[in-house]
Length: 229
Image (cartoon, rainbow, N blue to C red; front, top):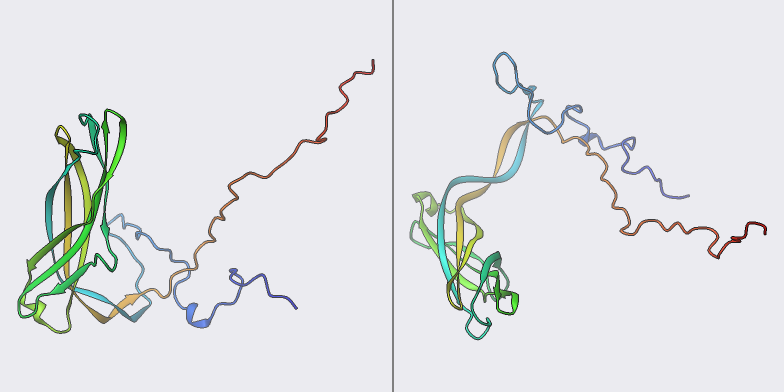
């Protein structure tokens, strides 16, 4: 007796607790009511209790830093052109990402390391430079809610190397933009209206082999090219 090949197919019986809800609904915008001009969604079918993170307060801090790189001893001759490639966070045991409350205050702090990479053209041609990890720390003041024990600080950092230019004969300056988000969040259970479970998704498109199927010509040896002479 072998295993059924129908497991996971749409005809396969699903557990009863997954079959509840409106089956013909699909994720996406609700149709717009032409009379009111507002989205016209069907009424929810149930109230459900979900466990999620709730954001009680948030703020952002935007900063731009100029990182100057001396290429003396590396570049050959003058720098003819330069452009930024990317910038990324560096997160590991040696370079930790820390987001925390400062005890006894209304302050929150984030500290992290990042490194940037740019390309430049000197007398020998195009080259790349990657910086060492750079430390950065930002502190902000939030409301009194930060003192509540049930709330904790959550930090998100988005980096952008939006410009690099030659600031000297063998010197490059890169502008690193930092968008830093601070949130006071807590794990909560919320009662929300819902339409049941999400519909079963369509099957994924299978990845074809990188090489096309081999279809050799037959015969593999030279044929008789004479015309009967």
